Image (cartoon, rainbow, N blue to C red; front, side):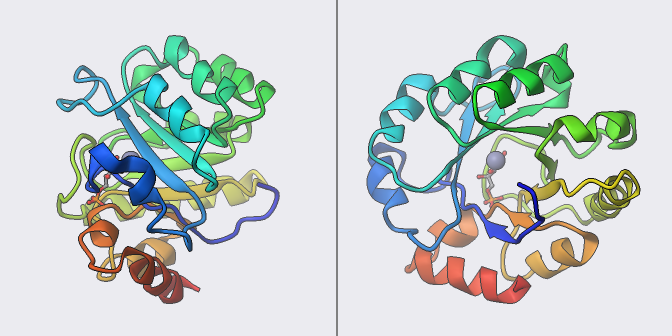
Length: 219
Ligand code: DX5
Ligand code: ZN
């Protein structure tokens, strides 16, 4: 992403997981669909993996934003890029060689993205930001949708944006967890420009209208 632009990337974690393609078709106004891959080890929850994502790739026209909440990202992440996913996010806490992995993802044509849990500071990764297209700052402990937004993570968004600016980088900063009409403005003010919203979108009777409302709040 050459220019930092605003994007709404809804998560289908709280949608009907047995009807994923149909659920994704309900959010045509989204900039991408955020797919949460969980392995029951890195987080205490299990969703779906590469076979499901690769199958969806064949029928979904929106760009696919993969959020890997799995151990040993070094081993498993490259296949999601090779399957044609536009963005592949792995957790700093679950990766042994983030630079090597990021370069591999980019070489496969995907945006390389780094995620940080609430207690993981951004400063140790300051010199690595140029290797990434997007930084995901979690605003809940990863694992489940519908959790309350953690305001304590807002200063980290601002510090990450300042670090990126100081390095002359146009990196996207994505927020994930408890993002909705009440919280999206604070995230944008702190410096985020890409917004994941799960339950806020899919608990709304008209998910696409909620996507458009969220976009209007930060436009
Ligand atoms: C949680 C996932 C999120 C989740 C967000 O670990 O990474 O993407 O779906 O759901 P909400 O928006 O309900 O917090
Ligand atoms: Zn997520």
